[in-house]
Image (cartoon, rainbow, N blue to C red; front, top):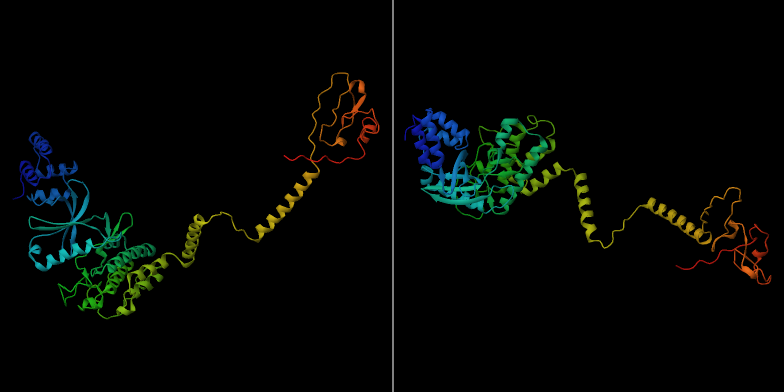
Length: 462
């Protein structure tokens, strides 16, 4: 269909695309009748209102009304192209969830080799479940269009980050390397070789999580089929020497080489030997091109890019461990391990007693001796509470109260008290003075004087 020349023709194309409901489309028809506008102004207004995306409006202005739907997904924009198809940002019609959909259409859909690569990528993505590998969601065929829906990563590729910001900081780049190596290790453990690790296939989300993309060139190690036997696969400058020669010895160490070349690009902003393959030449020295602070990371990258596979890291796990040591020095790692051991040991213990050093033991012994001495003193010498005195009446001598029971008689003067006809009694012991034989010595002391000897009464048990 030719490009629309009027607003009515544009709205007719929009109606055929099924992107806009009939009610919303009727509103724009009413506006176009009341205020004649060119089709591009109508398209811009629909984009401003959120009815269409810029990608959809551009295709509609070209007169293209299909295809805007792939299976249950509505196409929103074009993300890019991979090794086996074009990738679009789509939205599930029912769930309103954004996904990335790779489609194989046109001449590629009729190419048997391209179709087998596409299906192999779907099987490879479905076999993996790791936070650093993009997840596959669905595989389908509709109107001769093969599609593969995958997890959508809201972020930028490493290629775009370096082009926009230049060489990245060492620790930031090392963190990306550690995550990518963890994803590769998971793929290798599942028997899968990526064979196309490049800066464009490493996505960094807004949350800093790295995802490996594009498994179109991936190959299962136990699979005998080889769709491109003897032909080099991948991007020159990032593939290993054995992969460039098309050898059958391509394995996990080839992916390690490609990952090292990808990090080399992040350090320097350029690919190693971009115009030709690396062949058997020594690994490029990035020391002259990289910024300061990359020395420990450079050693890891140079080993990853060793020409001979036996001289490289043998597994992606080894790469991740080496980068972890770079990110966390040995002292920090041992400290973290000690803290973790202490945290796990406390819940299992039956007692929560603390083990203190010699200084604490000496202080504890001194406190114990002081406590024993104080305890012994209180057993023999109980402190005397102060006696409250009431003010005397005007013109009279103040009266003093004698000691109460159980208190030291020497702390208060003695008074004699009358007990009726039986005579006087000592208020210290409350015994009668009628018999000198039975009266204690305190009763014969002069009035107002304390006794000569005194011993405390035994304390009663509580």
